[in-house]
Length: 191
Image 1 (tube, rainbow, N blue to C red):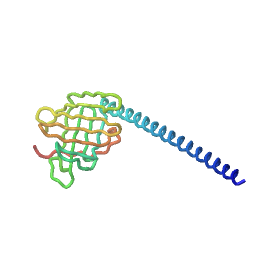
Image 2 (cartoon, helix red, strand yellow):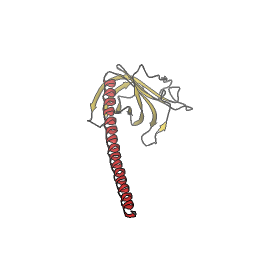
Image 3 (cartoon, helix red, strand yellow):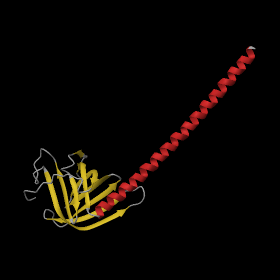
Image 4 (cartoon, rainbow, N blue to C red):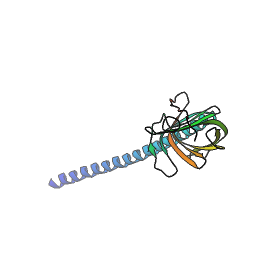
């Protein structure tokens, strides 16, 4: 009798252990499938945001609200996004940086470049890669022509202003002109 009870106990434990292993295998497969689905969703969203951002720039209705700026070699610093922006509105472009509690030409602790777009070229670099835009513009505050390179990275964007050896990098989210509330300064002195 004792042998029979032991054999039944071993059989019950063995089947319980096997079913627990089956549950773990099913759980692992479900987690892997869930991760794959999330990854595919993120890739699809990236492509949708990228194409929307490129379309906004081509339609010339785009504002990059920068929450970080940096110079050529400096670390990025966090800034106020309604003071630091790149705005494209029709044929007009405005690029502004402002650091609070500093003295600047625009009255906000920085510089505001306003001008006319001379050339705009956009390119989709492929699936999973950034969208790239180059804008050449003239302004009365720029000798010759300044270049602005914008990269659309999903729902965020970066921009790099090249002006007579000066480089300023912007990073943040982008919006339509109607959605963006910016505080545009006016340059009050000559550079």
